[in-house]
Structure formats: structure tokens, C-alpha cells
Length: 184
Image (cartoon, rainbow, N blue to C red; front, top):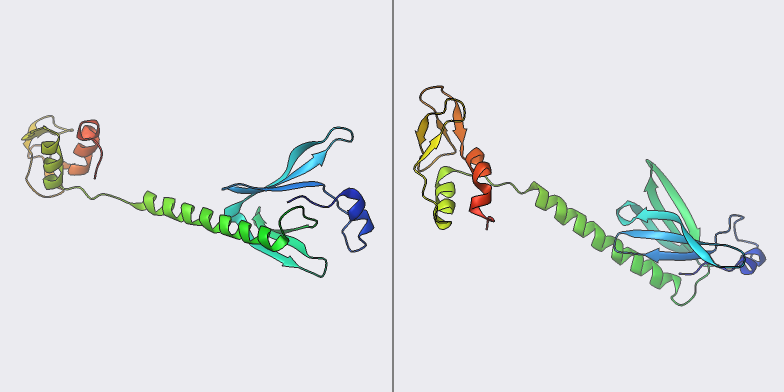
């Protein structure tokens, strides 16, 4: 979305006094305002960059049809107004930003769910995975005492008879992770 030209903005009595000329740029992660700089040669710099998940509201309001963007920054709510378009209508731009924001929020939620996935390993699962990888293990060493322990068929831990420490299936899995390959 291209903002109004300097002359068009100055001619508009309802326009605010802060004038930024440039473009709104939408990516799959951010909404950025690229400000036009330079008098004789046009170049652009990022004036503002808003993470899509921080957007609170996108609306088109007023008789002069301005695009209002409200977002969260530093614990505060910030509102910006953009006017003057080239190509798409403000309602199309609003819709595109809302759809892209919704997609970004869905990706973040999916990533959060993936991060919460935990496997509860027991010795039967561990033995099964090792056997699938061609590894047959019947004994393990106690990490504290160093003596051998029989690898149990079930359960999540086994206790060393000498030092009374527990050896957990998850710990053995972590040590053998490179040999087991990926979990299903």
C-alpha cells in the first residue's frame, strides 16, 4: 500500500501533521512501513516494523477512509493511521493483513503445542526401539556405582542394589539417542 503523496497530504485538511511517505509491506511475519527518504533519489528505510502476533486491530474508518493499525509495543497500545492507496482498496488491504495475521498466530500456536509434546519412556518402549534398530541390550551400568544392572522388561526406572540410586529409562534413552534414530 502506498501512502499519499506529500502534496495530496498537505491539501487534505483532515490529515495529521506527521507525514510519512512510503509503503506498507506485509510479510508472513511482519507488517512494516517503508519510509521514502531522499530528495532527488528515492530510497526506502524501515520506519516501523510490527510483528503480526502483536497486532491488536486493523480497521478502516472515517469519511476519508483511513487504515488504522493498532498494535502492542512495550506493554502499551500504539495506533497508526495510513491513508492514500495505490492499487488495492483499504478494505482489501485490511482483509489481507487480518488473514496473514491469523495464519501467523496459528503457526505460533502449533509451535507451542509441538514444544509441549513429551514422551514418557518406559523400559518396554526402550527395549522395543532398540530391537528395531538391531540392538540387543540385557544389562546396563549404574551411573553412580558402576556395577551392572539387569535391564527390566517394564517400568520407568530400576534401582541399583548396591547404591540404591534409580536409573530412569529416559536417561538411558538420552545416552542412546544417536543409535535409536527418530521417534515415530
